[in-house]
Length: 60
Image (tube, rainbow, N blue to C red):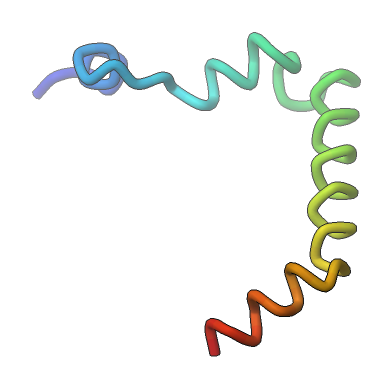
């Protein structure tokens, strides 16, 4: 069985955990926690928009 990293690389894919570590630091670091908080804020604010509310109605 091939290792997960080898399989991802062969298929031209990136391991999201490794990418996050490089871009924003390891989990628990101030940089990573700042990113997580900004991401939460962005998502929570987006859910309040009319566009998002309307898309939820369409799916139901």
